[in-house]
Image (tube, rainbow, N blue to C red; front, side, top):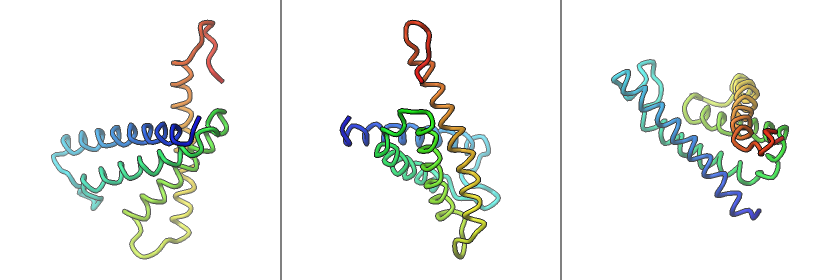
Length: 140
């Protein structure tokens, strides 16, 4: 596949995730009757902007390294890397007040090592069920 096709594929996935997260955020805002977190979190519009920025950045990274995702371990590594990049961006934009420190690094690493593999495996298993061949054997 060409790099352009891979980038389009990655951006499609990134935008699907952005739309899903936006939908959840809007539902929470409707349910709570507030578009901002009463605990001082970012307003809804800022979150939606981040979701789409993250979708473009994460999707582009995913598309660039798409060939690595052909194998489960490669997909997990890519998912963990993309999660680390996006969590770093989230931390930088919404959490850090003064400067990046070791706690920020720990949080990004810890959450990436959980979110990246779990999310990747969920997507992998969902795709495996869809792509079963006629004999019922899942793609590996």
